[in-house]
Image (cartoon, rainbow, N blue to C red; front, top):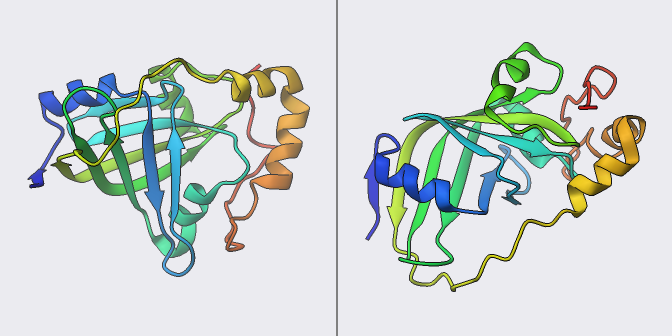
Length: 189
């Protein structure tokens, strides 16, 4: 049976900090729902109702496009236990995308270990925390982070990163704009 909370409580924080993966879900008013897995130790709890994650460049930018679509800022983050007690924890709320090169990004980046290819920080103001059993979630053993994404952006450099943003991150799969401005986004050196 699910339980609902107004904020992240200490037991929730402890659970979240032990997880190696989380999932982000968004949807525009019309179009496809997007669910993306995230890792790389990129998640931070900033307060009882305030969390953020550092987003690395990938083959699309559905989350950013959905957050820009007609003012729809809904975002859900889900954690589930792949070891230990069965738990699913969801954070619901309103999100904003803070693009690299903005003052908002610069203000939050000290909370993270910035990595090559980082393009934005997604910040969520939580209005509901929900836990439920995760008895249907299988048990998995964590081995390690994959180094391929960070290695790729480390080897290819800033110019290729900007070109990639311009080529792959300007529109969603439903042709929604992302608002990326590759030339103004200063990549890490």
